[in-house]
Amino acid sequence: MKKLNPLKFLVYAAAFFTIAVVVYIIGYILYKGAPQIVTEISNYMQGEYSLFDYKYSSKNVSLVPSVINTLIMIVISLGISTVLGVSTAIYLVEYAKTGNKFVEIIRITSETLSGIPSIIYGLFGMIFFVTYVGLGFSLISGILTVAIMILPLIIRSTEEALKAVPMSYREASFGLGAAKLRTIWVIILPSAMNGVLAGIILAIGRVIGETAALLYTSGTTTQVATNFMESGGRTLSVHMYMLTSEGTHFEQAYATAAILLLVVVLINALSYVLAKRLTKGR
Image (cartoon, rainbow, N blue to C red; front, side, top):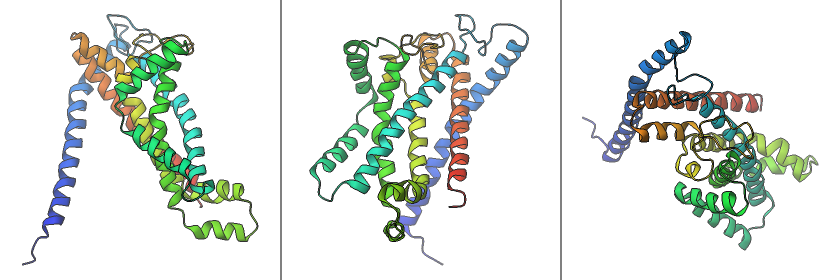
């Protein structure tokens, strides 16, 4: 009889435990939230107060404004962080010289920022963006705060993806007479696209699930932030937190959690399809 490797057993046990926990959490949320979603859809179709009404009130506790605010925050914060993060990673890998002290400072700083609790980012955003800059409790204050939060994640993931591209790709491109910038844009970035998009997907998950930092910056306003430079607005995670803290809308909170889960799955699926299209034929 073949002896079981203890290390292999521990690996399989850890993997099984992780999968079981994830399945349990997802199943529990859907079990508690799906029936309420069906009820809210039925109420909406019948013209009664529903979680899916466009405007929020104390009777319908609508999540539609929060969904819109969440999508706005994802698009703008990712746009800011992706441009800065990918550009920084390209500089660190492709342009910075080996042993550069400035590069080491950037790496240490980004790793340190990755471990800072979100509540600290929220306090920073409130002091700097809300008070000092004078943006007030607005969606743009939350967007800038979240963009700073996810920036280290995008930098590190993109840097590792660029390092994984074989040096022979660069040498072949240079040998054919391509300039460095063209080599990066046409050869290296497409080759590292899967790793870059993986970091962006993780960043999306953090933006969607962020609560503490946004309570101090974008606030808990229940309206759609039509002017995100001046008006605040709660996201889905903040909306769920407020419903549970009030203690009178637990069913709607579970429905919001289920919707939040579905939004995360949908965005991850779209990102996966986009990654396949961008790397197709490479």
